[in-house]
Length: 370
Image 1 (cartoon, rainbow, N blue to C red):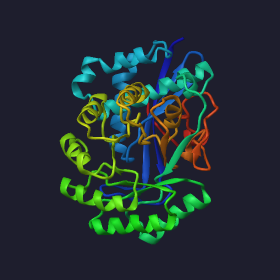
Image 2 (spheres, rainbow, N blue to C red):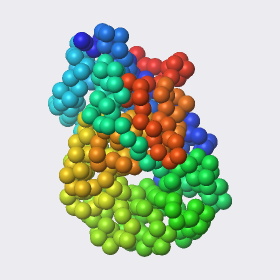
Image 3 (cartoon, one colour):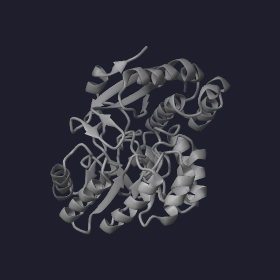
Image 4 (cartoon, helix red, strand yellow):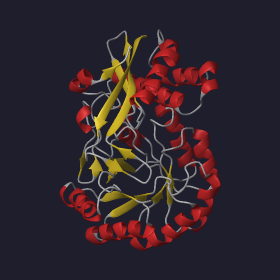
C-alpha cells in the first residue's frame, strides 16, 4: 500500500455570527488549510489545521505541505503514521527553519490526514482505531459569548444554547477595556442561567498579572469553571504565580505548539485544565503525547478546537484524560460527517475515519492548490 498523491487545499468558512471578536482578535471567517492524501487503494485521507483565514499565510502552510513534506511521503505506506511523523519531524532542513509555527501547522494537517486515511483503511472511526470505547463527552458551547456582542445578546444567546439546544455549559469572552464590564457580563449570564450551568471564561492573553489576579477574585464570585489564557501565552512563571493565588482554575494551551511547552507549564504547576489542540500541535501523534503527559499528572485535557470539534471528539472518546470538549459549529455545514451534540453531550461518530472529510459541495468550492 502506497501514498501516490498529496493534494493541498485551503477552505475558508464564514463564522456563524457574521463577525466575532474576543480581546485580541476579530474574525469573519475560519481558515482550514489542509491536505488530501491519496493511496493506491483509492482511499483518501483529509486533514487540516485552523487559522484566521488569511490567504497569504494559509498558502505558506499549503506550500510547506506540498514542497517540503510532500516529497517525503510519496511511495510510503500510509498506515505507518507514527513512523512517518518521526521522519517528517526529524528532517533537518525543515527542523532548521521552524519547530513550531508554519511548519508545525503543515505537519499537523498531514498527520491528521494520515490518521484519517489509516482509520478509513481499517473501516473504523478513529476513536475505535485508537482503542477507545463508545462514550458520550460533555460539550460546552463557545459560540455566543463574544466581546463585540452587547450584554443582552450574550444573555439571549446563552439562554438559547441552554434552553433550546440543551447545552449544560457555555463560555464567555472577557478581557475587554473595562474589567468591571467583564464582570457585569458574567454576572448577567450567571443570573439568567442559574447555578446548575457551567460558565467558562476566556481572556485570550489580554491581562497583565495584577489585572488577572484582581479579575479572578471577582470572577470567583460567579462560580466560573476556569479562566482561560488570562495573561501572555508563553509566560510560564506568570501563570504559575497566578495559579498559586487564584480562586479560579487556570486553563491554557491553544497557543502552545510543542509537547515540551506543555511539559514546562505542567511541571511548574501553572495550569489546571490542559487545552491541547491537535491542529496547533503536530497532529494526533503529538496531541496524544500531551494527553498522556497530562494523565500522568492527573490533569484533565479539554481540547481547544481549531478543527471546530470534528477531530477532537474522536480523540476525547479515545483518551481517558478527556471528559469535556468545546463546541463551535463553524465547519458544521462543510463537513461530510459533522460532529453532533444532543442534550449537551457529543454523540460518538460511527463513520470510518477522523471526521475531517469535507462535503462534495465544499470540495467543489475549495481553493485547491497544485
